Length: 418
Image (cartoon, rainbow, N blue to C red; front, side, top):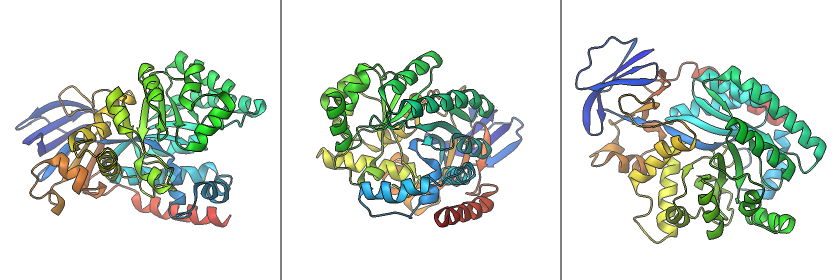
């Protein structure tokens, strides 16, 4: 599909952008090429789309169901109880709702870990966005359960070809306290053989650290390093309880992290992501929202503001995580982490593109668009979304959104009553 964006603000200048099957072929003052779709960019700014580094997408069905509760009670008495009832169809509609919400917030890529893998994959492919999708791998140190999980993931890896280019299979070991060493080693080997990303909760709570010390005599990072799981393909999520030694190890192995500030604050995990160690050690990280049961929202713009303000406050330094750096982490740094190439609006490149509506109070007087986005805005400022050359939203409308909202609401209420 050929898309032409006319008269849009790009890097402070009014430009036309011509996109052919997702690749930017021309940026000029006046493009005369023929297009299948012409978008009026007047009073809009073109930016690369946002990337959500850690989600449990179908948990949109749990939004507002179990808030303001201690973590252990929240998990064991509410969330896990509902998750045992989930069907693939439930996950499908919950993920479609998540994809709709992310599109509305300018997110075109999400890195997911959840049950019923194919429900998530189907939804992402149908909605037209990019999903790095893993099944939750939990064996609870039971060899039989471990083999079942290995067989499942082997089958899903083969099945994932069916959902390309929208869906990429990843491994999703839940955490070191729910996955055996043997299973982690199996994933390590397949990850290396097939260049598969490993997406895992890491150093989220003090309880996780205590478990690792008692079982392995090491921190979670030290244990994963000892068995060779850490590599440039490893993506650890949360990272609230990382030490200086842990960060040196992560840097040496070129492993990546995902900072999830809103969920960590809401669940009061005790510590926050160590920005100063990331900065000092040069560790690549991006932002994630987590699931809607522990965040309630899938807005990366909101997440950027939390991340920037927390970094300034905790480090007593107002220069930490400035707006442009924060924006770049949510876009081009995240794209590198997930092997998406150069996420820049330049000729020859193929980022997904969003248009921001500048006719909003928070963009006046618009001295600096990055400051306005990070500190003054939210996802509602996104007007248009283009993913892989396909227009997914224009004038804040996504085709079919009425059915998704209705079906997801019924699915959630039925699940709770089941």
